[in-house]
Image 1 (cartoon, helix red, strand yellow):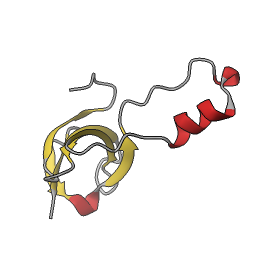
Image 2: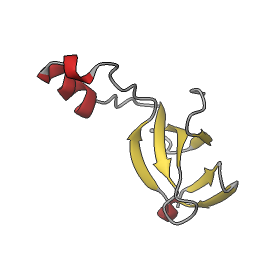
Image 3: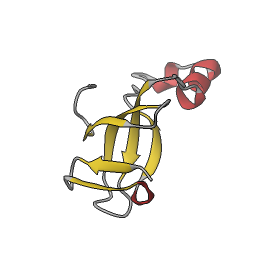
Length: 90
């Protein structure tokens, strides 16, 4: 069982209380109307899938309900750090 630290509740809880919400720090297009179909495809669906350190978004669904970011090693499944949404990449 994984234990995940919620930076808002300041508690470490079981992974069953959380939901994965995709890759963190995805920048929204500045002018969405100017994007081609290929650009939209890339923005909506194409994500990195690194081996090792990865920045992710999570939601504490059975707690505060808030989204936060985490740095997790995809090989060991260990969380290095969690931090509040809106904070710079760590």
